[in-house]
Amino acid sequence: MLRTILFILLSCAISVAVANDQRAQTKQQIAQTAKEIAEIKKQLSKIQQEKSAAEQALRKTETEIGQLEQQIKALQQQEKETQQELHELQQQQKKFAAARQEQQKLIAIQARAAYQSGQKEPFRLLLNQQQPEQFSRNLTYYQYIGQARQKQINEFNTTLQQLTHVSEQITKQQSVLAEQRSQLAQQQESLQALRKQRQQRVAAITEQQRKESRSLQARQADQAELNKVLKTIEDTLARQAREAAQAEQRRQQRLAEQQRQAEQTQMGTVPFSKTSKAVHAPIVSTAATHSGGAFKNLRGKLPWPVNGRLIAHFGSPRGDSRTKWDGVLISAPAGTQVRAIHSGRVVFADWLRGAGLLVIVDHGGGYMSLYGHNQSLLSKPGDQVQAGQAISTVGNTGGRDDSALYFAIREKGQPTDPARWSRR
Image (cartoon, rainbow, N blue to C red; front, side):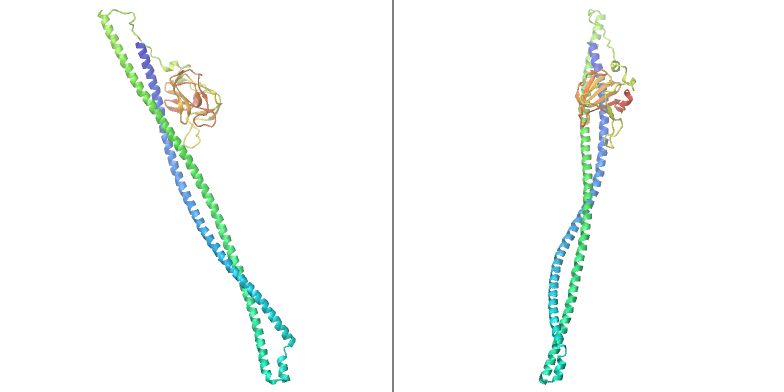
């Protein structure tokens, strides 16, 4: 009975040590996640400032475009009015042209009449003196005709000048409107291009903001998951502590009972029983059960958990500048068996955010190996596994697109490069 109790106490002690290591590791991951969340929030604040500046620039451009639209509308209205003026000028031009033609006809008629008379009729009247009483009236008549002819000629010249002036006004107005249209069109094209450029800038910043927000949400979810794991570990430690205390209490009671029986035997009050034997339970180190010796002595000698191509090295960036790989990533076909690199005890076999289906094996001495993104789990917490034993299969759980194995080694909760422990 005592041997059984000692074995239970030893198992509890080992479990407590494993849980303590796992708790330390989880706390470290929580601290790292909190640091990443703070950096993402800082980056989001910077992005928000850039977005505000870009939106302000876009606002200015769109305001200028709005003002330009008003100018264009005003110009269109002005063009409309100018077109009406041009139409009136053109109508006036037509009237002047018609008047010019009439004046040309009248002048032509008068010119022919003057030619036919030879411009000598007044002198004939003066020399013939046939009707002296009519001489004064006829002379006045011819004077009126000459004045009318001169007036028509002057009006004709004035009409020609007005036509020339109206034509110049029409040409000048059309040139001014064409120049204004050209300038506004160029300005509008430039502002539209600037608006498109600034819209693209705002869209790019917004997409970056969405990406960082999604990353922040993922990190916060990771932190919540890790907190949940930490609580589970702490609850387990508390339960194991209670069980250990109860086992210790039973052991003390058993030892007291044996002490009492031994004292009674010495006094002869209780006969010696062949079944009452002293029990000496051997204390065995977990490392002694590991095949190939202690884990700490196998640096550079351990096998890889799967055969495949190394696609992410220890310490390399994980897609952004804030986080780095704390293990390695090995590309392998889905369903490939993942084998334990050394004997030990499975302390975690479940889904974990960011790692998918994850197996953690405790090898004793503060050393643990982690196997993530599995397709299926072939072991459960509490299982004792041997080196080379299949514990899971390769998959792409935890958000991966292709199948690969996440493989990591922890030394007293601190990440260490698996390549330094594994055979080349």
